[in-house]
Figure 1 (cartoon, rainbow, N blue to C red):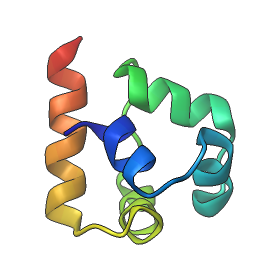
Figure 2 (tube, one colour; figure 1 turned 120 degrees about the horizontal axis):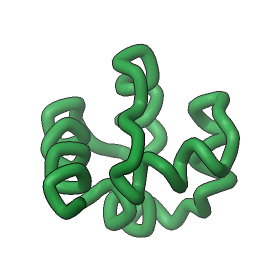
Figure 3 (tube, rainbow, N blue to C red; figure 1 turned 90 degrees about the vertical axis):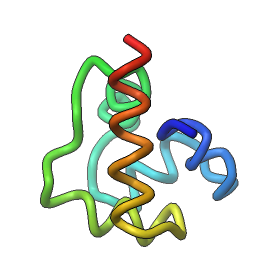
Length: 68
């Protein structure tokens, strides 16, 4: 399960997730595409917004990057 799937499971748009972690929608789109990774400082906010553990988030980010 990649970052996009976590976001969709949380029923959030890219815009809503971006607002939750104080970044723009385009940053979320880059993260989901695997062209950029979120800085570590955003990981706790992402995990909270996505209702998952930091470990699950890290696995999702690794899966997203490995698809590229």
